[in-house]
Amino acid sequence: MKQFQTVYRDRASFCEAVAEWQTWRQAHACGQALVHIFSDGADDAEVASARQIVEQGLPDAACVGASASGNLFEGSITTEKLVVTCTMFECADSFVRTRLLSIENRDAASLRAALRAMKADFAGVKAIEVIMTIDTIPIREVCAILQEEIPEDIPIWGGGAFGDNVFSAYVFEKGEAFNTHGIVLAMMGGGDLHVMNSYVIGWRPLGSALKVTRAEGKVLYELDGAPAYQIYQHYLRIPNDEHIFYNALEFPFAVNHRNRILLRHALACREDGSIDMSTDIPEGSVVHLTYGDPDTIMENVSLCAEQVRAFAPEVISVFDCFGRKSFWGGTEGSRETRPLHKLAPTYGFCTAGELIRWQGGMDHHNLSLVVAAMREGGPAEREIPVVREEVKQNESSMSMVSRLVNFINTATAEVIEANGRLSVMAITDQLTKLLNRGEIQRRITERIQANREAPVGADATSLVMIDLDDFKKINDTFGHNEGDQVLIAVSGLIKSALEELGNGAVGGRWGGEEFMLMLPGMTLNEAAGFAEALRARIAKLRFELCGSETASFGVAQAQPGEEADPLVLRADVALYVAKKSGKNRVCKGEPTTEK
Image (cartoon, rainbow, N blue to C red):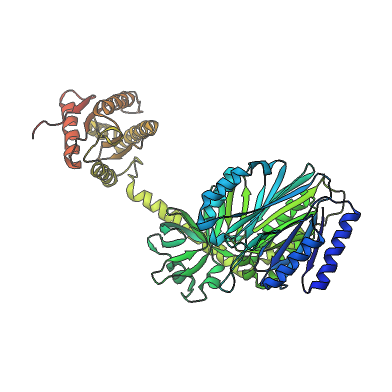
């Protein structure tokens, strides 16, 4: 593969550049060529002129393009408005097929139908670069359709065309007009074509996790039950004004999606405290606020560069989020693209969102750097520079901000852990490690209320009340330490038996030597059978001083319309019957027939 790149400044000089490309192509008997035209605010007339010259000077070349928020030229983010790149495929059987698909009225079904109709076009394809107008199409649906309809062994990567209040985002292919609601596929293939793709984030978590308690589409209403904007106002003092997009850009949200971390950033804030996001964050998601850390970003870039270097690329495709460019400060964003250009010629632009098929899933990213390394044939025997040393940060030079954030995150984690321990202690009996009476009583009441009308099947609930027989004699004869050992051993058996059920059953210490078990989804007879097995296991326990101990059981099942207190009373009455009947037995509390 061979790459040529130039900037369109005037028609004459651009004609000369394209003519030189064609001369080189003919001299080297190259196969097909793929031309990319990326415009960062260039006039429509200039783009049209560049397209016309390419089509006349390279008549057999495929050509695609898009509007951008910054172009990549010679490895750096440039202020040049119009950059044109030509990639020559040198192997005879290499090919490029391009296709522009419109998605009218956000109808993603039309995309699925189009992809199914072009299955033959995927034959021999080794990689697909996609460029789309992200804001005018249902991007999450599009990603899902691409994942489902394109053969899973084909790498996919790309980015979103950029638009703003001045001009609309657009894409195009050779011979077609600008399209403001579509997707361009550049399908590359051939027996000797090899492609690997990857992506870089570099934003680090800040503070504790937050739950999305209310969201609809791209609108994030609530986090942990409070207006979403409060996280920016309370913790970061970011005002809700016309600058919130840029102020919040450094602090996007990270969401875990299919075991991958994706970033989502705020676009604007509404008067009610809800936030318009770059992409949906589904209700119920757990998110982290993050912050941009230059050291971490560059370390991740260096790791990506090492992977790309091992692949030995001839050309590298780079789609860099415009948000990253804003984070660095315009052309300073070249810090993260130049290391890749040292490995092989690069092309690409600053996007309004990034796309990559990664580890079996197709995702829409924000604030990411997506990379695709390409070559024809095996790894070339050429010297590829090591770039890691250039970008790696020395740990001793860790920024003050990074150290402070690390301190905050560590302190927050310790507080959360301590609160978790206190929460467990508040509901746990310290001797037996079962639930305390207040907690087991609360859970019984909650379940009975939730299933009061029809407590049958999976919604059935049975209680088992347990009392150790003649326990006072153990304490009086052998001392309270022996009594405690009996309670601990019996509690251990109870806990093991409940875990074996695996149905959410719980147990608690009801009183001194009394226990209460709640068995979800179990009928009276099933609960009685469970109690009988537990009774036998307790009777087999052996202790150093008292020898053995037995227990009596009362079992009751919740009836339709019955409250928690009457149910507990029926279990207590059944236990009383077991005691009066000779102890060490199970008795069932039959439901009353009184009206």
